[in-house]
Amino acid sequence: MTEMFFKAIVSSTSEFPSQLRSVCQCLYQATCYSVNKVSTERCPGQARGTAVVTQRFPQSSIGAVGSAMFLRFINPAVVSPYEAGITDRRPPPRLQRGLKLMSKILQSIANHVLFTKEEHMTPFNEFVRSNFELARRFFLDIASDSPGSDTLNHTASYISDSNVRSLHRLLWNHQEKIGQYLSSNRDHKAVGRRPFDKMATLLAYLGPPEHKALADTHWSSLNLTSSKFEEFMTRHQVHEKEEFKALKTLNIFYQAGSSRVGNPIFYYIARRFKAGQINGDLLIYHVLLTLKPFYGKAYDLVLDLTHTGPANRFKTDFLSKWLVVFPSAAYDNASSVYLHNCNSWVREYTKYHERLLLGIKGSKRLFFVESLAKLGEYIEPSCQCLPGGTLALEEDLKVFVGALRLSHKDTKVSIKVGPTAVQVTSVEKSRVLGQGVLLNDVYYASEIEEVCLLDDSQFTITIANQVKVKNCLEMQGVFKVLSQLKK
Image (tube, rainbow, N blue to C red):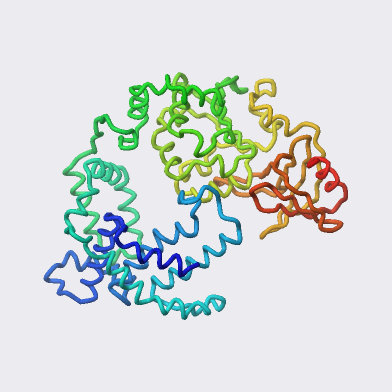
């Protein structure tokens, strides 16, 4: 399988993006310059700039190209094709492990090194060694000018005015952090302060960044601000389109009732958003229109995460769009955000996007609530307007305690069986966005394909399109109840 992937990659030189080709060429030229020990008097600025690259890749002038391309671009997509948007669903565990092993082999070829420390990987060394030369030729190809064009042409092809403005704004807003990072970085002595001083001087000369005027183009090319986004959607009369009207009827986001302190409450029902089926831009517009009358005062938000999973996820670029487009007034006036029924998938999702969600990690405005009774401390039960499917999960329950969920790390859980679903709730708290949270995984009866009794104390639940949930119990009875639920 690795050979198939590797050959497909190295034979794709003609399709290699010109933007990445420019990056590769810069890396290659920098390391060539340092390895060949060109006189520093001839170009002192370049010598300083390449010192760090040479320290990292001393073995070969092409090493920086191969390692960077595989480490930062190719292998992340190989290991996580679902997160990269290549596949519609996450690979099963066995295939996931195969992809990880394959990425290790590919990275070894790119780094031009054999396996020595990991004995279970040493059988691949002959394969790795046999592909060193093929990889080297591929790296040289992608580090050269694209056929029929010069460096200037394919470099300038993607440097537009909007990109320059975005870079200007990014550097202007974060120049203090950049300075602090450089002063504390371990390569500070090698790099010196001069690059930062030059940047600060240039920014002072340019002044604060300006916002680009709205263009009559597709909204993805627009300057991402709330006002620009709303203006674009309004101009195209999105609110009158049938697709937008249909989205509103799904009740993904709505306002209902007030909290104990008198704040209006908004509800977001995560499981009702279907990635790939619902236009995400329309959802953002619907949320903005619903919130707009309340921008000037405090409000509370309830995120119903019950049974949320991969089908309801925001892809990375869409999550980033939320964070940029959402108006600052709406952020500032969100008094409290209640996250109801957080589950194992949500925990992994927030870990994967930790950098994007860093701003809300540990926020005192976030409250994780694992039950309607807990939510009742903030919102009167009579004022809670959660969907009937969420409310029904706490009705007519048979609860079994003292169970273990068997996985790579055994966890203590309680198992709740109701008329329509089984819930596996952790007893010990897990960390989610910097807080201790009890996770509650919900499996509806319609999803349960099989309940299998392994012995007197263990059983498995097979969920459609998911891995088996293996549990170990200290008491009898739950298997019988689950079997009845399945029937």
